[in-house]
Image (cartoon, rainbow, N blue to C red; front, side, top):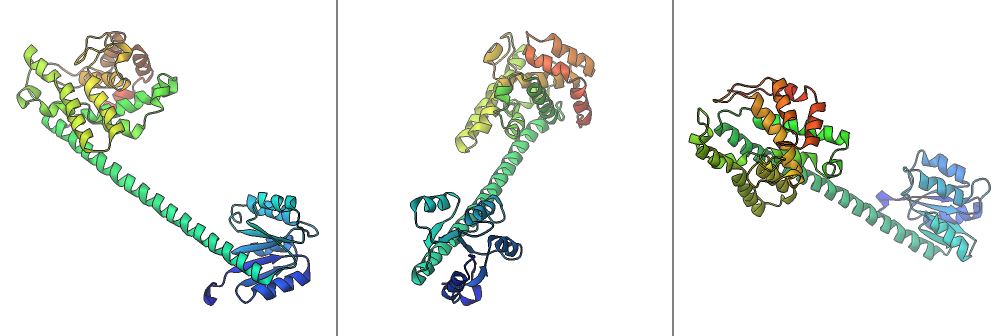
Length: 363
């Protein structure tokens, strides 16, 4: 039984005064009893007092017990209060109807004091255990969410550091990674709006995509400074070395995959790193993939990467004006770029140029 200082509240609802008195006498020693002569009175008291359990008669004038429990269970404020029907009815169909409406038990009148007390005690104990389990589950869910956020924040920080290392080593790319992220997001949103490759795109976790895209040039870490920061155009042999940043990036990401449970996230990263220099007509590198054989990540990043290279200053060229860079993308449809993606890019108007202006190269 409950401690006397923590007495639980029971509402006994019955239009028969004799049964109200009997119930109060049986239960009053152990619980705070509210003896109520009608369902209407019940709902009036519920505005002020929330009971731990309701004993509800079925046959009452005005609103009967079935109608009352239906209202209780449809109201989120009262739906979890356990209800036991008390009635003189003894048929199996009546008992089934009461349980089907949400009652937890069914006791007949006249009351057997010991049996009534034990049933109430058991149901209140079960209800408390259910509430504790729910609290435990809620706290566990909260803990898991917090840990997930912490892991994501750590993952984000580590990837950002790796991306920063690439940019710090490359004197010419500035905020290339930040800009390509923004281009990528704008292009993906446009594709979804156009219902182009939407089935695949909607399966992507956009947070994973944005994060993993930062690693598309991670292989440049393996390229020597003499080539990476050469103040002039690369020789064919040097360019061949530079092209290995794609396969080197895939190798680095695969090593990460062996030491971390980030398989889905890293699969996107591998596609970005390994295929963003492939071309629609098969003339790209490192694998010479063609058309739809190029992963969608690589096809999208190809547009973002080339556009950003065109509008940026290099030792061997001036920056293209945004309009000229956009025209190069459009002219490259069906050769360098997926024509469907080039069409979506064209619909973005000056969005890419606005992104480039917002995230300029920094010295």
